Image 1 (cartoon, rainbow, N blue to C red):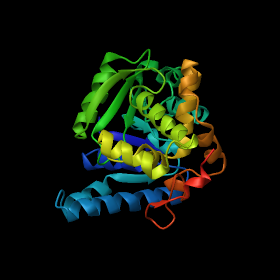
Image 2: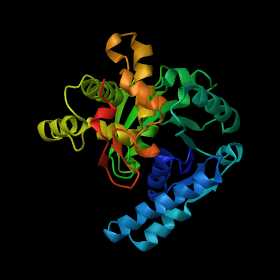
Image 3: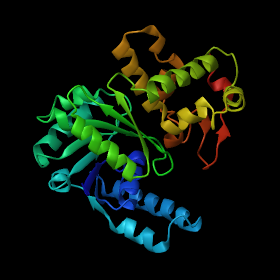
Image 4: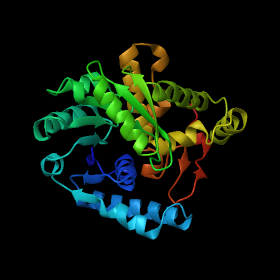
Length: 296
């Protein structure tokens, strides 16, 4: 299994393409936007340059990695001869179902279809295809080139053979795969997102400010960054989407997204991607937004 396609050239997609190409795979990076593809290659190049400067790879290895990535704007062309497709599009169930229906129609019969979804049911995605046994979750962590974990999610019909193949492929990327079952949020986000949501509720109720909440979790719980800063990195829209999946999937009030989170997403305050969330990122560095903007 050496021919890979990655759908989506955003933060996760370019990271996934990077690690596959660096590990010797032939990668088609697919996005409808040529600009997105060009930005993705620029990001991968920058990350590889950083690795060269730290002497983790050589200049020749950098060139070989970039040479294994082909930019493609037509999905049907990019997936027609692939052994594995990893979908890394926006966390939207309707979009993913549409993509997987097209993938099922345009990939070879033996091609494995993986999704990088962080919360959406693998079983639901697989049901739109004629190969549910070959559909699996392959949830990478951000930033992909750095983070070791890959959450491998089996759908109801995912075969043992496909699961082993993807576990082995993950190990070939020098990642650590962990197999989990198909429940809303899987493991990572079923635990992480309610914690982030509770941090937002704590801010919303005026218990403490943004920096205070993050500092408590960093110094008291040894987290590398606080939950509100992490939410900014993930994207508040993504956090809201995952909370809605949890809320719908479990029908439990404890998973209801905080009204502040809903309001910030509605207002376009999405975190790093929009330049402002719980912190301001407009100048390329983290600055605290006035806490009064979030009170009540």
